[in-house]
Length: 294
Length: 278
Image (cartoon, rainbow over all chains, first blue to last red; front, side):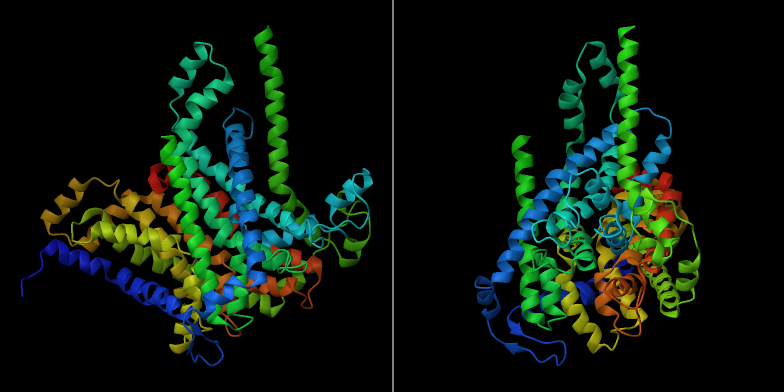
């Protein structure tokens, strides 16, 4: 047997902890997870019953799954279409000269660092109809009827959750945009200004094209967060727990509930696989739009 | 004259907008802190806080800090977050060093594979992991929890570290190689100190992710290991804890991570600039 080159041998040694972990705790589970989707399996007895594509067929007629799918897409769209531009706007604002800029920038990291369940708790207090000041203030100003609730209202609960996740993500997007803006060549902007370019033109012709890669990072990040991140689970379970009347169930939350509290690991894995497929499609569509515009 | 005037109104507009953004970001915390110093009777008496004065009391903090399940969860969470961070940093930087600076077959494949694994929803892995941990009798133990949290972190952190380590000039490493220094030694003596800003970023990110995680913690920990975030969820879903006490618990549990993020803000920016996000 040929001896390994020392470099490959060293690489093998260095990579071994990483690779053993990857194999045992990630690759094996990914394969097992696919096998689960072909089975009926409960955590209580761990005795798989092979049912072929039975779980996938059940998806097609599952009303709750369809509702969760639509709600997921709405949430994802809102989170990206509102959150990312808001982040960009905040970044441009915090790139201006003003007193206390360092403090303001540091504040951008606060929502990101906040545990999502604590974010849910704080927002629940803020937007509560009983002792929260926001609804009380709007009521006093005559804009809302008394006893108006957000999270208890079937038509508003999802939007309320989206607002909470906006609080959590858009400052993070702003922070990432801001670090991208640090590399913007200021000579180019200055000379454009000297030649009389308007702020809007500078933004459209110089700043935005320059920020394109950062914009891509933020859009993908937004997709991951809203689809299968803390925004799709922690905030939901903390504030509405899927209610009222399943109106805030999203796929990720549905998959977890199906697998664990409802004890159907096979069907839960199947829904998690659908989330995976949506994640891949989202990333591909985004990259496609990207390269066409280039 | 006209220019000055425009710039003055512009400056006022900037300050107004900054205040609005800061209000949006900080108002949940301000209200949460106020609530944590109120009594329950005071809290439900209308009108709510900014429309009435409050007299602060420390009762909620005293109660929650002496409430054993909370204190235990706080310690366990710290233990798990520190252990996870250490494991991810050691395994991740060894692997990233090999990917960034050594030539071997399958190097590019491995690098791309790591990214793809990260893109997959963690829940797809969590379901079989729970089964695996149950079979290894690691379910509901600290070690099982550290492994579970490492799943969330190891691929992404390794990927970041590859980008950071690529910034270290290879000549230094070649020189050390010629001196007969082992790879492991040059990793810890040279590569990590030279890329400390990026390393800081990864460190903070790992700790915050582990500390903040709810889904894995709530599924892998059942009775024996109840971490902080699941404990807060338990409070929120109607255990015998008052709202004001819950607010105190929430403020306490976000204190370590928020403080860490603010204190290390400069290092985090430097880390991002040094190419952690490309």
